[in-house]
Image 1 (cartoon, rainbow, N blue to C red):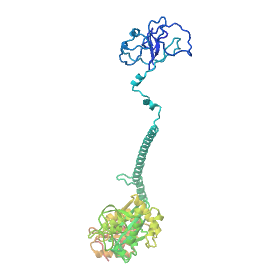
Image 2 (cartoon, rainbow, N blue to C red; image 1 turned 30 degrees about the vertical axis):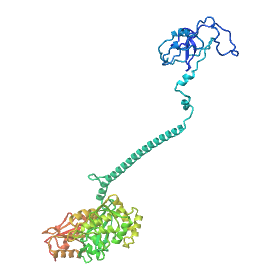
Image 3 (cartoon, rainbow, N blue to C red; image 1 turned 30 degrees about the horizontal axis):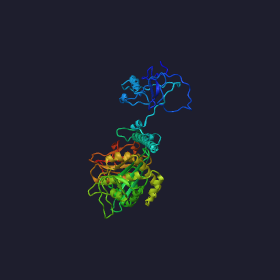
Image 4 (cartoon, rainbow, N blue to C red; image 1 turned 180 degrees about the vertical axis):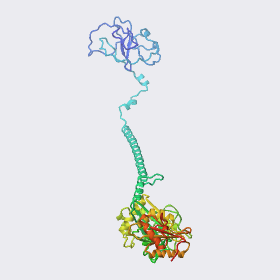
Length: 558
Protein backbone atom coordinates (compact mmCIF):
# COMPACT_ATOMS: atom_id res chain seq x y z
CA UNK A 1 0.00 0.00 0.00
CA UNK A 2 1.21 3.48 -0.77
CA UNK A 3 2.31 5.34 2.33
CA UNK A 4 0.49 8.41 1.15
CA UNK A 5 -2.84 6.61 0.81
CA UNK A 6 -5.52 7.10 3.51
CA UNK A 7 -6.48 3.58 4.53
CA UNK A 8 -10.03 4.66 5.47
CA UNK A 9 -10.88 6.57 2.32
CA UNK A 10 -12.85 4.41 -0.13
CA UNK A 11 -12.08 6.72 -3.04
CA UNK A 12 -8.34 6.67 -2.58
CA UNK A 13 -6.18 4.64 -5.01
CA UNK A 14 -2.60 3.66 -5.00
CA UNK A 15 -1.69 6.53 -7.34
CA UNK A 16 -3.64 9.24 -5.52
CA UNK A 17 -2.25 11.54 -2.91
CA UNK A 18 -3.61 14.19 -0.57
CA UNK A 19 -3.47 17.38 -2.57
CA UNK A 20 -5.67 19.65 -0.38
CA UNK A 21 -8.95 20.23 1.48
CA UNK A 22 -12.36 21.39 0.27
CA UNK A 23 -14.56 24.14 1.75
CA UNK A 24 -15.77 21.81 4.51
CA UNK A 25 -12.33 20.71 5.58
CA UNK A 26 -12.51 17.31 3.90
CA UNK A 27 -9.34 15.88 2.28
CA UNK A 28 -9.02 16.00 -1.50
CA UNK A 29 -6.99 13.36 -3.28
CA UNK A 30 -5.49 13.46 -6.75
CA UNK A 31 -2.57 12.32 -8.89
CA UNK A 32 0.53 14.43 -8.47
CA UNK A 33 3.89 14.12 -10.36
CA UNK A 34 6.91 13.05 -8.51
CA UNK A 35 9.08 15.99 -7.52
CA UNK A 36 12.79 15.90 -7.02
CA UNK A 37 14.09 16.77 -3.68
CA UNK A 38 14.57 20.48 -3.40
CA UNK A 39 16.74 22.33 -1.09
CA UNK A 40 15.17 23.79 1.96
CA UNK A 41 13.61 27.13 1.27
CA UNK A 42 13.95 30.22 3.24
CA UNK A 43 10.34 31.04 4.15
CA UNK A 44 11.45 34.37 5.27
CA UNK A 45 12.48 35.37 1.69
CA UNK A 46 9.86 33.37 -0.20
CA UNK A 47 7.81 35.38 -2.61
CA UNK A 48 4.09 34.60 -2.70
CA UNK A 49 2.46 34.68 -6.09
CA UNK A 50 2.91 32.89 -9.38
CA UNK A 51 5.21 33.67 -12.32
CA UNK A 52 3.22 33.06 -15.43
CA UNK A 53 6.43 33.32 -17.63
CA UNK A 54 8.27 30.61 -15.75
CA UNK A 55 8.62 27.22 -17.33
CA UNK A 56 7.56 24.13 -15.47
CA UNK A 57 10.37 22.07 -14.07
CA UNK A 58 11.79 19.24 -16.04
CA UNK A 59 9.78 16.09 -15.79
CA UNK A 60 6.44 17.88 -15.47
CA UNK A 61 4.90 17.62 -18.87
CA UNK A 62 1.49 18.69 -17.69
CA UNK A 63 -0.19 20.43 -14.83
CA UNK A 64 -1.51 18.48 -11.87
CA UNK A 65 -5.03 17.17 -12.16
CA UNK A 66 -7.96 19.21 -10.94
CA UNK A 67 -8.76 18.15 -7.37
CA UNK A 68 -11.81 15.94 -6.76
CA UNK A 69 -14.44 17.13 -4.28
CA UNK A 70 -16.58 14.26 -3.04
CA UNK A 71 -19.97 15.66 -2.08
CA UNK A 72 -23.21 13.93 -1.20
CA UNK A 73 -24.99 14.89 -4.40
CA UNK A 74 -22.95 17.28 -6.61
CA UNK A 75 -24.51 18.61 -9.71
CA UNK A 76 -23.03 17.39 -12.95
CA UNK A 77 -20.44 19.81 -14.31
CA UNK A 78 -18.91 20.15 -17.71
CA UNK A 79 -15.27 20.19 -16.96
CA UNK A 80 -14.50 20.67 -20.61
CA UNK A 81 -15.75 24.26 -20.55
CA UNK A 82 -14.20 25.15 -17.23
CA UNK A 83 -11.83 28.02 -17.47
CA UNK A 84 -8.18 27.17 -16.91
CA UNK A 85 -6.86 28.09 -13.52
CA UNK A 86 -3.46 29.15 -12.44
CA UNK A 87 -2.14 29.14 -16.03
CA UNK A 88 -2.44 25.41 -16.70
CA UNK A 89 -3.45 24.10 -20.07
CA UNK A 90 -7.07 23.14 -20.41
CA UNK A 91 -6.20 20.14 -22.53
CA UNK A 92 -3.95 18.76 -19.89
CA UNK A 93 -6.64 19.32 -17.34
CA UNK A 94 -9.18 17.30 -19.35
CA UNK A 95 -6.69 14.47 -19.70
CA UNK A 96 -6.00 14.50 -15.99
CA UNK A 97 -9.71 14.43 -15.13
CA UNK A 98 -10.52 11.35 -17.18
CA UNK A 99 -9.88 9.14 -14.16
CA UNK A 100 -12.59 10.85 -12.02
CA UNK A 101 -15.75 8.73 -11.84
CA UNK A 102 -18.85 10.41 -13.31
CA UNK A 103 -21.48 9.12 -10.88
CA UNK A 104 -22.39 10.45 -7.49
CA UNK A 105 -20.86 8.32 -4.81
CA UNK A 106 -22.59 8.00 -1.44
CA UNK A 107 -21.07 9.83 1.42
CA UNK A 108 -18.60 7.52 3.12
CA UNK A 109 -19.45 6.37 6.59
CA UNK A 110 -17.55 7.88 9.43
CA UNK A 111 -14.59 5.67 10.30
CA UNK A 112 -12.62 5.72 13.48
CA UNK A 113 -10.03 8.42 13.37
CA UNK A 114 -6.58 7.15 12.56
CA UNK A 115 -3.48 8.30 14.23
CA UNK A 116 -2.30 11.56 12.63
CA UNK A 117 0.37 10.98 10.07
CA UNK A 118 3.53 13.06 10.39
CA UNK A 119 3.91 15.74 7.77
CA UNK A 120 5.65 14.75 4.60
CA UNK A 121 8.62 16.52 3.22
CA UNK A 122 6.71 17.17 0.04
CA UNK A 123 4.73 20.38 -0.40
CA UNK A 124 1.02 19.97 0.21
CA UNK A 125 -1.31 22.71 -0.92
CA UNK A 126 -3.35 24.29 1.88
CA UNK A 127 -7.09 23.62 2.14
CA UNK A 128 -9.17 25.73 -0.14
CA UNK A 129 -11.53 28.24 1.33
CA UNK A 130 -14.89 28.70 -0.29
CA UNK A 131 -15.12 31.76 -2.40
CA UNK A 132 -17.62 34.53 -1.83
CA UNK A 133 -20.01 33.24 -4.51
CA UNK A 134 -20.36 29.78 -3.03
CA UNK A 135 -20.75 31.26 0.47
CA UNK A 136 -23.40 33.67 -0.76
CA UNK A 137 -25.29 30.89 -2.52
CA UNK A 138 -25.83 29.01 0.72
CA UNK A 139 -28.64 29.70 3.17
CA UNK A 140 -26.40 29.59 6.24
CA UNK A 141 -25.74 32.91 7.92
CA UNK A 142 -23.91 33.79 11.07
CA UNK A 143 -26.89 35.27 12.85
CA UNK A 144 -28.75 31.96 12.41
CA UNK A 145 -26.43 30.33 14.94
CA UNK A 146 -26.47 33.17 17.44
CA UNK A 147 -28.72 31.18 19.78
CA UNK A 148 -25.83 28.86 20.57
CA UNK A 149 -23.90 31.50 22.44
CA UNK A 150 -26.75 33.72 23.66
CA UNK A 151 -28.47 32.51 26.90
CA UNK A 152 -32.23 32.28 26.90
CA UNK A 153 -33.74 34.89 29.22
CA UNK A 154 -36.80 32.72 29.84
CA UNK A 155 -34.85 29.55 30.66
CA UNK A 156 -34.83 30.27 34.40
CA UNK A 157 -38.55 31.07 34.32
CA UNK A 158 -39.23 27.77 32.59
CA UNK A 159 -37.17 25.90 35.16
CA UNK A 160 -39.00 27.64 37.98
CA UNK A 161 -42.35 26.82 36.40
CA UNK A 162 -41.37 23.17 36.03
CA UNK A 163 -40.32 23.05 39.66
CA UNK A 164 -43.59 24.72 40.73
CA UNK A 165 -45.65 22.31 38.64
CA UNK A 166 -43.77 19.34 40.04
CA UNK A 167 -44.14 20.56 43.62
CA UNK A 168 -47.85 21.28 43.14
CA UNK A 169 -48.37 17.78 41.74
CA UNK A 170 -46.54 16.31 44.69
CA UNK A 171 -48.71 18.36 47.07
CA UNK A 172 -51.85 17.13 45.35
CA UNK A 173 -50.71 13.53 45.61
CA UNK A 174 -49.82 14.05 49.26
CA UNK A 175 -53.25 15.63 49.91
CA UNK A 176 -54.96 12.68 48.22
CA UNK A 177 -52.91 10.25 50.27
CA UNK A 178 -53.76 12.06 53.50
CA UNK A 179 -57.42 12.15 52.49
CA UNK A 180 -57.42 8.41 51.88
CA UNK A 181 -55.75 7.84 55.22
CA UNK A 182 -58.36 10.00 56.96
CA UNK A 183 -61.20 8.10 55.28
CA UNK A 184 -59.69 4.77 56.29
CA UNK A 185 -59.18 6.00 59.87
CA UNK A 186 -62.77 7.28 60.01
CA UNK A 187 -64.13 3.96 58.75
CA UNK A 188 -62.07 2.11 61.35
CA UNK A 189 -63.32 4.39 64.15
CA UNK A 190 -66.93 4.03 63.04
CA UNK A 191 -66.52 0.27 62.84
CA UNK A 192 -65.12 0.23 66.37
CA UNK A 193 -68.04 2.33 67.62
CA UNK A 194 -70.55 0.02 65.93
CA UNK A 195 -68.86 -3.08 67.31
CA UNK A 196 -68.66 -1.53 70.79
CA UNK A 197 -72.33 -0.51 70.65
CA UNK A 198 -73.45 -3.92 69.48
CA UNK A 199 -71.27 -5.52 72.12
CA UNK A 200 -72.84 -3.43 74.84
CA UNK A 201 -76.36 -4.16 73.59
CA UNK A 202 -75.54 -7.85 73.45
CA UNK A 203 -74.04 -7.80 76.93
CA UNK A 204 -77.05 -5.93 78.30
CA UNK A 205 -79.38 -8.35 76.53
CA UNK A 206 -81.06 -5.64 74.47
CA UNK A 207 -80.66 -7.36 71.13
CA UNK A 208 -83.83 -9.17 70.03
CA UNK A 209 -83.78 -12.98 70.31
CA UNK A 210 -80.33 -12.90 71.89
CA UNK A 211 -79.62 -12.98 75.62
CA UNK A 212 -76.40 -11.40 76.82
CA UNK A 213 -74.31 -12.08 79.91
CA UNK A 214 -75.50 -8.85 81.52
CA UNK A 215 -79.12 -9.84 81.15
CA UNK A 216 -78.37 -13.26 82.58
CA UNK A 217 -76.54 -11.68 85.50
CA UNK A 218 -79.48 -9.36 86.17
CA UNK A 219 -81.90 -12.26 85.96
CA UNK A 220 -79.70 -14.31 88.28
CA UNK A 221 -79.54 -11.40 90.72
CA UNK A 222 -83.32 -11.07 90.56
CA UNK A 223 -83.79 -14.76 91.26
CA UNK A 224 -81.19 -14.80 94.02
CA UNK A 225 -83.15 -12.61 96.43
CA UNK A 226 -84.80 -9.27 97.08
CA UNK A 227 -83.93 -6.39 94.78
CA UNK A 228 -83.07 -2.95 96.00
CA UNK A 229 -85.26 -0.21 94.54
CA UNK A 230 -85.31 3.54 95.13
CA UNK A 231 -88.53 5.25 94.11
CA UNK A 232 -90.46 8.45 94.58
CA UNK A 233 -93.95 9.52 93.59
CA UNK A 234 -94.34 12.71 91.51
CA UNK A 235 -97.62 14.63 91.30
CA UNK A 236 -97.87 17.11 88.40
CA UNK A 237 -100.39 19.86 89.24
CA UNK A 238 -101.84 21.76 86.27
CA UNK A 239 -102.11 25.27 87.70
CA UNK A 240 -103.76 26.65 84.53
CA UNK A 241 -106.46 24.12 83.67
CA UNK A 242 -106.64 22.20 86.94
CA UNK A 243 -106.20 18.51 87.56
CA UNK A 244 -103.29 16.29 88.54
CA UNK A 245 -101.25 13.47 87.05
CA UNK A 246 -99.18 11.03 89.12
CA UNK A 247 -96.29 8.68 88.39
CA UNK A 248 -93.72 6.57 90.21
CA UNK A 249 -90.05 7.03 89.30
CA UNK A 250 -88.22 3.76 90.06
CA UNK A 251 -84.48 3.13 90.13
CA UNK A 252 -83.73 -0.59 90.35
CA UNK A 253 -80.27 -0.57 91.89
CA UNK A 254 -79.87 -4.35 91.56
CA UNK A 255 -80.62 -4.66 87.84
CA UNK A 256 -79.41 -1.12 86.95
CA UNK A 257 -82.62 -0.22 85.18
CA UNK A 258 -85.05 2.65 85.50
CA UNK A 259 -88.81 2.86 85.06
CA UNK A 260 -91.73 5.24 85.11
CA UNK A 261 -95.05 3.77 86.30
CA UNK A 262 -97.96 6.05 85.41
CA UNK A 263 -100.79 5.97 87.97
CA UNK A 264 -104.35 6.66 86.81
CA UNK A 265 -106.43 8.98 88.95
CA UNK A 266 -109.06 6.24 89.22
CA UNK A 267 -106.72 3.98 91.21
CA UNK A 268 -108.42 3.22 94.52
CA UNK A 269 -106.42 4.00 97.64
CA UNK A 270 -107.60 3.68 101.23
CA UNK A 271 -108.46 6.85 103.05
CA UNK A 272 -107.96 7.75 106.69
CA UNK A 273 -111.32 6.22 107.63
CA UNK A 274 -110.55 2.99 105.78
CA UNK A 275 -112.82 3.72 102.86
CA UNK A 276 -111.44 3.64 99.30
CA UNK A 277 -111.09 6.82 97.29
CA UNK A 278 -109.57 7.73 93.92
CA UNK A 279 -105.91 8.71 93.75
CA UNK A 280 -106.66 11.96 91.89
CA UNK A 281 -109.14 13.06 94.52
CA UNK A 282 -106.76 12.18 97.33
CA UNK A 283 -103.98 14.28 95.75
CA UNK A 284 -106.24 17.29 95.14
CA UNK A 285 -107.44 17.22 98.75
CA UNK A 286 -103.92 17.75 99.96
CA UNK A 287 -102.20 14.45 99.46
CA UNK A 288 -101.81 13.73 103.16
CA UNK A 289 -101.21 10.05 103.60
CA UNK A 290 -101.23 9.44 99.85
CA UNK A 291 -97.75 7.97 99.82
CA UNK A 292 -98.66 5.52 102.62
CA UNK A 293 -101.91 4.66 100.85
CA UNK A 294 -100.00 3.80 97.69
CA UNK A 295 -97.62 1.64 99.67
CA UNK A 296 -100.64 -0.18 101.08
CA UNK A 297 -102.17 -0.82 97.67
CA UNK A 298 -99.00 -1.62 95.76
CA UNK A 299 -96.92 -3.19 98.52
CA UNK A 300 -94.09 -0.75 97.88
CA UNK A 301 -91.83 1.49 99.94
CA UNK A 302 -91.93 4.99 98.38
CA UNK A 303 -89.06 7.16 99.55
CA UNK A 304 -90.61 10.59 99.00
CA UNK A 305 -93.20 12.78 97.28
CA UNK A 306 -92.30 15.33 94.61
CA UNK A 307 -95.00 17.91 93.92
CA UNK A 308 -94.20 19.36 90.50
CA UNK A 309 -96.45 22.27 89.50
CA UNK A 310 -96.56 23.06 85.77
CA UNK A 311 -94.61 26.38 86.05
CA UNK A 312 -91.72 24.50 87.66
CA UNK A 313 -91.94 21.81 84.98
CA UNK A 314 -91.52 24.59 82.40
CA UNK A 315 -88.46 25.84 84.26
CA UNK A 316 -86.97 22.34 84.41
CA UNK A 317 -87.36 21.84 80.66
CA UNK A 318 -85.76 25.21 80.00
CA UNK A 319 -82.89 24.49 82.39
CA UNK A 320 -81.95 21.28 80.55
CA UNK A 321 -82.02 23.10 77.19
CA UNK A 322 -85.33 21.88 75.79
CA UNK A 323 -86.37 18.34 74.91
CA UNK A 324 -87.21 16.23 71.86
CA UNK A 325 -90.38 14.16 71.84
CA UNK A 326 -92.13 11.96 69.27
CA UNK A 327 -95.57 13.55 69.51
CA UNK A 328 -98.59 11.37 68.69
CA UNK A 329 -100.97 14.26 68.12
CA UNK A 330 -100.99 17.97 67.39
CA UNK A 331 -101.92 20.25 70.26
CA UNK A 332 -103.67 23.48 69.24
CA UNK A 333 -102.70 26.76 70.83
CA UNK A 334 -104.81 27.98 73.74
CA UNK A 335 -104.77 31.75 74.09
CA UNK A 336 -106.81 31.63 77.29
CA UNK A 337 -104.05 29.90 79.22
CA UNK A 338 -101.25 31.08 76.90
CA UNK A 339 -100.40 27.57 75.76
CA UNK A 340 -98.46 27.38 72.46
CA UNK A 341 -99.27 24.96 69.70
CA UNK A 342 -97.38 21.66 69.34
CA UNK A 343 -96.92 19.94 65.99
CA UNK A 344 -97.28 16.21 65.41
CA UNK A 345 -94.26 14.18 64.30
CA UNK A 346 -91.02 12.56 65.32
CA UNK A 347 -88.32 14.39 67.28
CA UNK A 348 -90.29 17.55 67.83
CA UNK A 349 -88.28 20.17 69.72
CA UNK A 350 -90.31 21.36 72.68
CA UNK A 351 -89.68 24.35 74.91
CA UNK A 352 -90.90 24.54 78.48
CA UNK A 353 -94.42 25.85 77.70
CA UNK A 354 -94.76 23.46 74.76
CA UNK A 355 -93.72 20.51 76.92
CA UNK A 356 -96.35 21.38 79.53
CA UNK A 357 -99.03 21.84 76.85
CA UNK A 358 -98.26 18.41 75.38
CA UNK A 359 -97.93 16.60 78.76
CA UNK A 360 -101.31 17.87 80.04
CA UNK A 361 -103.25 17.63 76.76
CA UNK A 362 -106.31 15.36 76.75
CA UNK A 363 -108.78 15.56 73.93
CA UNK A 364 -112.51 15.39 74.59
CA UNK A 365 -113.67 11.81 75.03
CA UNK A 366 -110.09 10.53 75.12
CA UNK A 367 -109.15 7.98 77.82
CA UNK A 368 -106.91 9.10 80.63
CA UNK A 369 -104.24 6.60 79.61
CA UNK A 370 -103.47 8.67 76.47
CA UNK A 371 -102.75 11.78 78.50
CA UNK A 372 -100.60 9.76 80.92
CA UNK A 373 -98.56 8.37 78.05
CA UNK A 374 -97.82 11.93 76.85
CA UNK A 375 -96.68 12.93 80.31
CA UNK A 376 -94.48 9.82 80.44
CA UNK A 377 -92.79 10.85 77.18
CA UNK A 378 -92.05 14.31 78.57
CA UNK A 379 -90.60 12.89 81.80
CA UNK A 380 -88.44 10.44 79.86
CA UNK A 381 -87.13 13.22 77.60
CA UNK A 382 -86.34 15.40 80.61
CA UNK A 383 -84.44 12.57 82.34
CA UNK A 384 -82.30 12.09 79.23
CA UNK A 385 -81.21 15.74 79.49
CA UNK A 386 -80.52 15.76 83.23
CA UNK A 387 -76.76 15.93 84.01
CA UNK A 388 -75.21 12.58 84.91
CA UNK A 389 -73.23 14.19 87.74
CA UNK A 390 -75.36 14.10 90.94
CA UNK A 391 -74.01 17.46 92.11
CA UNK A 392 -74.81 19.12 88.79
CA UNK A 393 -78.26 17.54 88.81
CA UNK A 394 -78.84 18.88 92.33
CA UNK A 395 -77.93 22.38 91.13
CA UNK A 396 -80.45 22.00 88.29
CA UNK A 397 -83.18 20.98 90.72
CA UNK A 398 -82.34 23.80 93.09
CA UNK A 399 -82.40 26.31 90.19
CA UNK A 400 -86.09 25.57 89.56
CA UNK A 401 -86.95 27.57 92.67
CA UNK A 402 -89.42 25.00 93.89
CA UNK A 403 -90.05 24.38 97.59
CA UNK A 404 -89.62 20.66 98.06
CA UNK A 405 -90.81 18.24 100.68
CA UNK A 406 -88.36 18.25 103.59
CA UNK A 407 -88.05 14.48 103.22
CA UNK A 408 -86.92 14.98 99.63
CA UNK A 409 -84.34 17.76 99.39
CA UNK A 410 -82.50 18.94 96.26
CA UNK A 411 -79.48 16.70 96.84
CA UNK A 412 -81.55 13.52 97.24
CA UNK A 413 -83.82 14.33 94.32
CA UNK A 414 -80.88 15.36 92.11
CA UNK A 415 -78.99 12.14 92.84
CA UNK A 416 -82.05 10.03 91.97
CA UNK A 417 -82.74 11.96 88.77
CA UNK A 418 -79.10 11.66 87.67
CA UNK A 419 -79.19 7.86 88.10
CA UNK A 420 -82.50 7.59 86.24
CA UNK A 421 -81.08 9.82 83.51
CA UNK A 422 -78.05 7.52 83.16
CA UNK A 423 -80.40 4.57 82.61
CA UNK A 424 -82.50 6.54 80.14
CA UNK A 425 -79.45 7.61 78.09
CA UNK A 426 -78.45 3.99 77.41
CA UNK A 427 -81.99 2.73 76.86
CA UNK A 428 -82.22 0.75 80.13
CA UNK A 429 -85.58 2.31 80.86
CA UNK A 430 -89.24 1.42 80.53
CA UNK A 431 -92.55 3.26 80.92
CA UNK A 432 -95.76 1.48 81.93
CA UNK A 433 -99.32 2.55 82.61
CA UNK A 434 -100.75 0.77 85.64
CA UNK A 435 -103.91 -1.04 84.61
CA UNK A 436 -106.91 -0.17 86.76
CA UNK A 437 -110.45 -1.50 86.66
CA UNK A 438 -113.44 0.84 86.61
CA UNK A 439 -113.98 0.22 90.34
CA UNK A 440 -110.39 1.31 91.10
CA UNK A 441 -108.87 -2.12 91.59
CA UNK A 442 -105.79 -3.40 89.77
CA UNK A 443 -106.11 -5.65 86.77
CA UNK A 444 -104.50 -9.07 86.91
CA UNK A 445 -102.05 -8.08 84.20
CA UNK A 446 -101.03 -4.96 86.15
CA UNK A 447 -100.50 -7.03 89.26
CA UNK A 448 -98.27 -9.59 87.57
CA UNK A 449 -96.24 -7.48 85.12
CA UNK A 450 -96.02 -4.09 86.78
CA UNK A 451 -96.50 -4.38 90.51
CA UNK A 452 -94.48 -7.56 90.97
CA UNK A 453 -91.85 -7.19 88.24
CA UNK A 454 -91.27 -3.44 88.26
CA UNK A 455 -92.28 -2.38 91.76
CA UNK A 456 -91.55 -5.62 93.60
CA UNK A 457 -94.47 -4.97 95.92
CA UNK A 458 -94.97 -8.50 97.21
CA UNK A 459 -91.35 -8.83 98.33
CA UNK A 460 -91.49 -5.72 100.47
CA UNK A 461 -94.74 -6.76 102.08
CA UNK A 462 -93.32 -10.15 103.07
CA UNK A 463 -90.70 -8.66 105.40
CA UNK A 464 -90.85 -10.06 108.93
CA UNK A 465 -92.63 -7.88 111.48
CA UNK A 466 -94.67 -5.98 108.92
CA UNK A 467 -98.43 -5.92 109.24
CA UNK A 468 -100.13 -8.44 107.05
CA UNK A 469 -101.64 -6.95 103.94
CA UNK A 470 -104.95 -8.55 103.09
CA UNK A 471 -106.50 -8.09 99.72
CA UNK A 472 -110.21 -8.50 99.18
CA UNK A 473 -111.92 -9.32 95.90
CA UNK A 474 -115.70 -9.51 95.88
CA UNK A 475 -117.23 -12.48 94.05
CA UNK A 476 -120.67 -12.29 95.77
CA UNK A 477 -122.20 -9.57 93.63
CA UNK A 478 -123.55 -7.93 96.76
CA UNK A 479 -121.97 -4.60 97.66
CA UNK A 480 -123.23 -4.71 101.26
CA UNK A 481 -121.46 -8.00 101.90
CA UNK A 482 -118.21 -6.54 100.59
CA UNK A 483 -118.45 -3.51 102.91
CA UNK A 484 -119.03 -5.79 105.90
CA UNK A 485 -116.00 -7.97 105.08
CA UNK A 486 -113.80 -4.87 104.65
CA UNK A 487 -114.87 -3.54 108.05
CA UNK A 488 -114.09 -6.89 109.67
CA UNK A 489 -110.56 -6.93 108.27
CA UNK A 490 -109.84 -3.34 109.32
CA UNK A 491 -111.10 -4.08 112.81
CA UNK A 492 -108.83 -7.11 112.92
CA UNK A 493 -105.75 -4.87 112.46
CA UNK A 494 -104.91 -5.85 108.91
CA UNK A 495 -103.80 -3.53 106.14
CA UNK A 496 -106.67 -3.63 103.71
CA UNK A 497 -106.07 -3.79 99.98
CA UNK A 498 -109.10 -3.31 97.77
CA UNK A 499 -109.04 -5.89 95.00
CA UNK A 500 -112.27 -4.73 93.42
CA UNK A 501 -114.88 -7.02 91.98
CA UNK A 502 -114.27 -10.40 90.43
CA UNK A 503 -115.17 -11.06 86.83
CA UNK A 504 -117.74 -13.65 87.84
CA UNK A 505 -119.45 -14.75 91.04
CA UNK A 506 -118.25 -17.71 93.10
CA UNK A 507 -120.23 -20.01 95.40
CA UNK A 508 -117.44 -20.65 97.91
CA UNK A 509 -114.89 -18.26 99.37
CA UNK A 510 -111.17 -18.90 98.93
CA UNK A 511 -108.11 -17.60 100.84
CA UNK A 512 -104.67 -17.89 99.19
CA UNK A 513 -101.07 -17.15 100.16
CA UNK A 514 -97.80 -17.42 98.22
CA UNK A 515 -95.16 -17.41 100.96
CA UNK A 516 -95.13 -20.26 103.45
CA UNK A 517 -94.40 -17.70 106.14
CA UNK A 518 -97.87 -16.26 105.59
CA UNK A 519 -99.74 -19.54 106.08
CA UNK A 520 -100.56 -18.89 109.73
CA UNK A 521 -101.77 -15.39 108.90
CA UNK A 522 -104.00 -16.78 106.21
CA UNK A 523 -105.60 -19.10 108.80
CA UNK A 524 -106.14 -16.15 111.14
CA UNK A 525 -107.84 -14.18 108.34
CA UNK A 526 -110.17 -17.09 107.75
CA UNK A 527 -111.13 -17.12 111.42
CA UNK A 528 -111.66 -13.33 111.37
CA UNK A 529 -114.14 -13.64 108.52
CA UNK A 530 -115.80 -16.72 109.94
CA UNK A 531 -114.61 -19.00 107.14
CA UNK A 532 -113.38 -22.60 107.57
CA UNK A 533 -109.66 -23.40 107.42
CA UNK A 534 -110.35 -25.62 104.42
CA UNK A 535 -110.75 -22.41 102.39
CA UNK A 536 -107.05 -21.62 102.93
CA UNK A 537 -104.55 -22.92 100.35
CA UNK A 538 -101.26 -21.96 98.78
CA UNK A 539 -101.43 -20.40 95.34
CA UNK A 540 -100.80 -17.35 93.24
CA UNK A 541 -102.40 -14.27 94.62
CA UNK A 542 -104.75 -12.36 92.38
CA UNK A 543 -104.09 -9.18 94.36
CA UNK A 544 -100.76 -7.74 95.41
CA UNK A 545 -101.03 -8.67 99.06
CA UNK A 546 -99.70 -11.20 101.53
CA UNK A 547 -103.08 -12.88 101.86
CA UNK A 548 -105.92 -12.58 99.34
CA UNK A 549 -109.58 -13.27 100.06
CA UNK A 550 -111.93 -14.04 97.19
CA UNK A 551 -115.27 -13.54 98.90
CA UNK A 552 -117.96 -16.05 97.78
CA UNK A 553 -121.67 -16.40 98.45
CA UNK A 554 -120.98 -18.70 101.41
CA UNK A 555 -119.79 -15.66 103.41
CA UNK A 556 -122.35 -14.49 105.92
CA UNK A 557 -122.02 -10.95 107.22
CA UNK A 558 -122.44 -10.73 110.97
